[in-house]
View 1: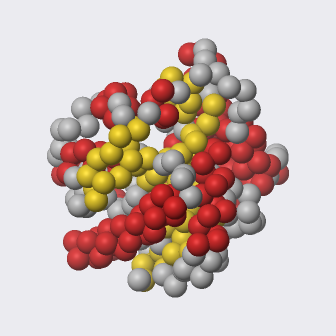
View 2 (view 1 turned 90 degrees about the horizontal axis):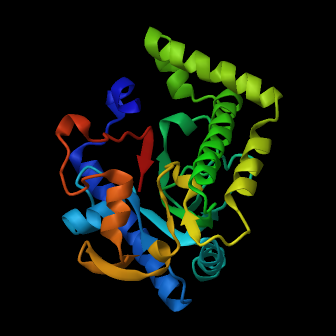
Length: 287
């Protein structure tokens, strides 16, 4: 949606290339810490597709996604803060009033990266790598579906609260001259007002953590914060690893990456037509 309404903020090829280079540097530091502290992680999402299909970034991709089970993610948070206290800031859900996302993020200090919907926030506006936490999920198929859909609902409730409490000045300004965007934005802020008064942003973010962090071992694992209902597998999927090339280096990936990607993305080896590719935008970016 943002690439449609905010074409002036679409990253050009040179900027996208520079962004990918900087993100790769962050990945190398994370990989170093994980190897040093024996922390298991994997490439996932578009980064995993990039490794398998392109042996590097998807040419038009602008982020890096990693995943790890909760116990490993908790070790990574501690280790990154110990190893690189001056270089990186580690954001975790509920760590701050303005940390309004559901994943762990490794931010590089001294950089600037402002996403359009979060332009109303004054913190956590740096380049980052996402770390998605792999959690226990119900073994029953119907229960898994309900679990995923409920998680997505409460996070969407939190996200409209963000629009209401920290409205993006970029969207506010553009909406003045765009009736379609204005209607969409007005609806989100109205919903944000409702959910802010019925629970509130912090309440829904806490619920995301509570629902996502399922204690019971079921033999099934998933990524609630990924937002994908089908991204749940028998635990073997996330516990058995191999490696794949990404930008000239080997990184850990699920051993059965083909099954993982086909379930989540379909025919992931088919390169989409230009019109169907995600075109990424950034309000501000500084390296």
